[in-house]
Image (cartoon, rainbow, N blue to C red; front, side):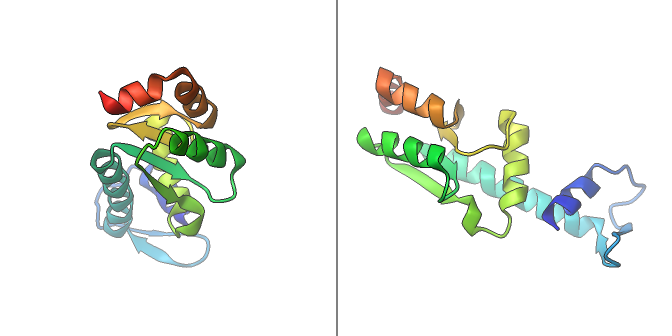
Length: 136
């Protein structure tokens, strides 16, 4: 359902209050759709801005586990959001895709800057680059 709402945002419409009906027979006000999309954007942007190290993860993902372990090995104080435990998982991943060029997890940010996914994070920890970036 969340993906349908985001896809509807791409439609050109005359009014924000125009109703959109989907094949399920449910109608949504575009203002509500806009609010939901803005809410996800605001949430993600705020988390990235408010945390020195921010990880968008899924609890069962082996690449996420490796990235989180690598960050823990340098005592990085990382905030982790497990997307699979949220109802807006797909919407957050869609927005992260717009921000970073990919929807995959993990998506790791340091001081507001996207540094990469799992392999990128592990490599930057092993090279010492990430610890330097965090401490700078």
